[in-house]
Amino acid sequence: MYAVVEAGGEQIRVAAGDMVRLEKMTGAVNSEVVMDRVLMISGEGRTVWGKPYIAGASVKAEIVGAGKGEKILVLKTTPKKAHNKTKGHRQQYVTLKIKEIIGG
Image (cartoon, rainbow, N blue to C red):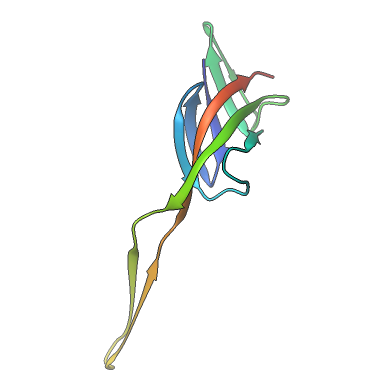
């Protein structure tokens, strides 16, 4: 059984036992997260689609770890001038372990 969930600005296919890396979510390490924006559930020979979400469906996950991604450099230049500005960005991520999928 697997589900497609909308979380962290992305649509992700998850199944029980999967490890997923998403953009930063609120919550401490080893805490439980319930994602209720389930777009699709498939398993046992049938598929259920939401319009846009499935009512009563959710995915339970546990926050395993948190960290940052690699640094991305952003360069802003002004044409015909000697002005350049460099900024760096490191996106914060959280690692989730999917516990179970509750169908609606």
